Image (cartoon, rainbow, N blue to C red):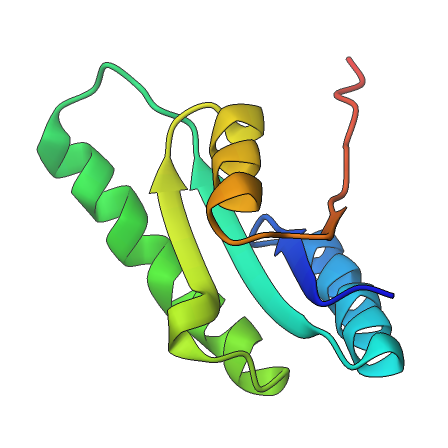
Length: 106
């Protein structure tokens, strides 16, 4: 049913839970699983953005290692999450996007 599944995660325990569910779906359907983490673009200096990416990469690498996701199917992007996720969908023929939406409660 699904050939290519993209799981958009953050680097939290919720992100790991969502990836676990996406991995189960990929196994069920024999799908290729990709993972994406989007860092919201800011007007901060490029050095700071580079640091943000360097900080998140080891966590994403560990998550992909646990689920045998190939390096070529791992994406860390800067931008608006919805834009970057849909760009990946179009570029890689994604059939299903698995995400978690959190609501800030103040």
